[in-house]
Image (cartoon, rainbow, N blue to C red; front, side, top):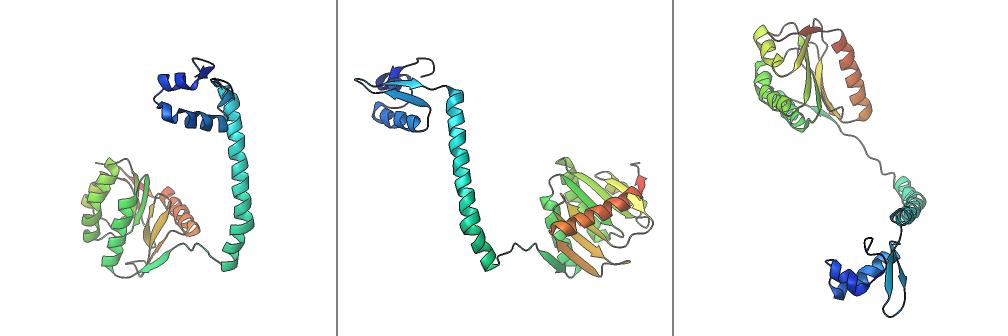
Length: 226
């Protein structure tokens, strides 16, 4: 219609994919939405409106609709929410046992999309064997991996991990943890072995874990791949 200017319903049907039996329904819909104007007659003729003018009209209608929805939410739904004291509670779990901890670690690694921070003071052989294949896959998919560990880890293991992550070493580390995409964290507390394992997606707790990791990372020794 923009090419032809004023035209009839039969011509619109001929040059479009809309069957004649549906053309009036389509044209009436376009008129209601403000995209065309109609001059009644025998036959009626249809005129395209300026696209910029029609778009402005659509935008105004949408803004009015959003204001109406916003008012309904604030006046009706929000009081119900507050009255019933419905609250979204972030999950905070305490994990027990190496098996449950390792299962949660593998679950978290499987969800990583962009950035992975790992602080592992004394990773056991079982943990290394369990997570290394997943770290390889994450690196190949473009996930940036930062891994911090203690000087007690053997050179062979360090070399192996350095193939898939940026590795730094610290002399002293109290506990460790994993932070996935800045959204969830697993905290392992204890000096020699974890005495408390906490998983959380609480925004404040995750941010605290990130800030602490960055503080330790900035003062750790960089390990170069050999």
